[in-house]
Each structure stands twice: as structure tokens, then as C-alpha cells.
Length: 196
Image (cartoon, rainbow, N blue to C red; front, side):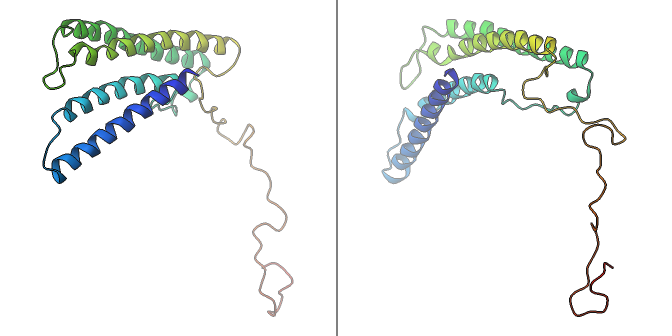
């Protein structure tokens, strides 16, 4: 439910940004009258889209990741890597809350040049997003430890580990089908009834 709400917010922001950019181009190059507020509006929407989208991607586990090394580690090392990963995310969330909150507070009384919006409105999404990311990191850490304790994969959505070398495991090579690889001669040739 929360993901759908966040997706709707991101979609609305992106659609509004595209519409403003399109209208701005029409006004500038067709009507020869630039919209003075379009740049500030686009910056505000891009800022919100970035941080709301960042939190949404974290919730959906869609951030870029490379699992090729982690899935080959023993389970205790996978748990250690997962824990380190969540601690780093929690640290980044704290940085966003602390420094983003300071920025929002410092610029709370100033206004943008053209639209005269409070500048703090532009920055307040940073600590909000950082706080939500930190909460999500703690929840993911608890869920990952529970999955590990239950014998499941530590990383959510991680690919299974490859089978050991030597063909052991579920990927053993089966014997070829009888006649596999045989090439039959076209009809009408001598010996067309037997494989060559």
C-alpha cells in the first residue's frame, strides 16, 4: 500500500515536471515569452522526485547491487555483509537527517527568487527521506536476521548460490538422449535410413 502511494507521488511529480518543461519550451520558442517560474518549479520537483524515489527504490529493494560475490560466501559472511550494508544505509540516513535538517532550518526564513516559496520547503524532503530510509534499514536488518535464523536467504531476492564445481548438485549433466547429435541424410541418398 505504501509503495503504491509513493509510486503515485513519483508519477505525479514526474508528469508535472514534464508538463512544465513542455509548456516552458512552447512559451519560450513559439510565443517568445519565457516563463520565469519554470526553472524553480523544475528544480523543486526534481529534488522531491529524487528523494521520494530513493526511498521507494530502497523499500522495493531496487537499488543497484552486485550479488555475484556475496552469494558465494558462507552464510555467516553473507550475514556480516548484509549487516554492514544495512548499517551503511542507516548511517547515510542519519547524515541526511542531520545535515538536511540543518539546511532546512537555516533556510526556513529565506524565499526563492521568483516563486517566493520558503526555501526550507525545498530542503525538508531530505531529512524526511533520510529518516524513512533509516527506519527501513532497521526493519530490513531485523527481517534479515530472522530469515538467517530460519535458514532462509539473508539478502531479500538474492539468487541461489551456484552448485559446487565438478558437476555435483542439482545441475548434474544428464546423459544425452539416444540419437542426440545424429545427423540423418536427406531422403533419396544411399544410407538415408541410418545416422551418419
